[in-house]
Image (cartoon, rainbow, N blue to C red; front, side, top):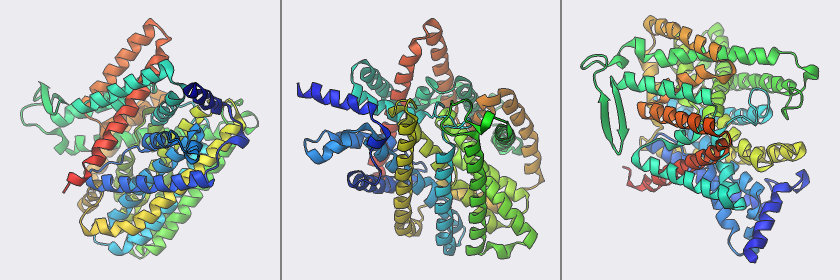
Length: 561
């Protein structure tokens, strides 16, 4: 009887009003938000410097809140609200990604290049950029560019996990089966997070990601080789000739970057076209969205001005202004602000459709273009650090807002949606601030031990190697097909996702995505009602893969030397 009563109470919370929504700074929420943010930031820092990746702690935060809510003490019952759990998972997720991707990674770039004195100035700039990044997302989420109804896969996985605990029944069983698929696949080496996303993400976008992953996997391995069960299965060897390594040739080494440049430029033009399109009364496309096009234009305009101001601040406090002439300094500031906002838009588009955000790869692309523009080495280091600090918070917060959007009834109560989104923004800012404090305290301890985010060395070596005319030639050549693919794909963003696959994909990723899409096509074609079943299974698979990756990576930290 007690269990039935609890279940009724749990279901009632799905129909709250805006005034009933928990507040991010209410003492009970604030205490746990800070505690979970500290945990998330430490985990993010440890994993980024020791493994090169930061996990999605969003689901972990939600599960932690769920477990606490089941403790038979009145204080902990406050966490039974799914909206409280949403605020907690938003805070821990924001702290994890900002500490790892937005703060310690960027500040490590000048340090690894021998300029430890620039760590604090870069930390200030990266923190401000991260706050701007999250704020722009908050102001542009649920617009025509970044609709709340978009895929945002990790957000769906978090929401389905929370709802399964509340609703129980068939949905919970399907989610558990999906989580079993996610964990089982990860154990044998399959990217079941991508498999899950393929079952409910945008079909065309995921097909492009799979195709790009498969193409780059074949080029890199000179064959068709799949790594499963910890070993390589050589299906086709020496496809391009014995001993051939195409990636040693500039033509192929810079192919992914060139294609992303071309696709990115068309994507940005599509964004501009969207912004300039006339809407009746400047409204949000006949009420489809909670944010109007006018608000989106204003947010992006203010965002660029804010990035411009931070770029000037960075140029001054790091002293790089003295390395350039006045005209080149002006060009650097304009380009740095452009790179920051363009990077977050490209990364955000990829994250919305696939759940992947190619933040490092996008920063490398803007670095290459900056090198071709002739900026000196240290201004380039600050440029790529600044660019790298934008995008991750944008994508991460969008996932959390998507989770909240689902928990709040998919926008059926606009006032509740706006209030909930505002409280999530406060939680995100708290998480970022906690991350700043921990990075400021801990960063030198990592750097003194030679522990940096691995990509920092890549950026440093790229700057030291320089970029000649051959690089520019291949970037320009490959930009043409990238632009064509993006143009033909239109709003599906297939160019961006194809380039993302080329930049960070592999053969096993490509095969997994394409096979999952084939299963989806066959199953849904037989019965359209099966789409919902695949959605839940896919969300469970993504959640299971995320939890497996989180716990295996975290538990193995003590074993790493």
